[in-house]
Length: 79
Image (cartoon, rainbow, N blue to C red; front, side, top):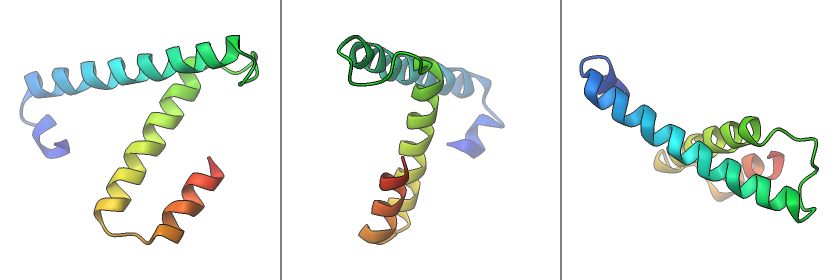
């Protein structure tokens, strides 16, 4: 997909919309968790959403490359 974005602006726009929608959904989950006291209120939901989204996408790529469960657990445990 990354190579397609260089040659097709319509796909680039669609991918950006999808990224924005996923980030917004994660941020909403974080806000709900903050309202319930599960996540500190001083954390920026949008910033944390981008972090978690990026981490999940990175883990997906690493999983596709066949990283071990221990490797994936190390990433998860740092998050």
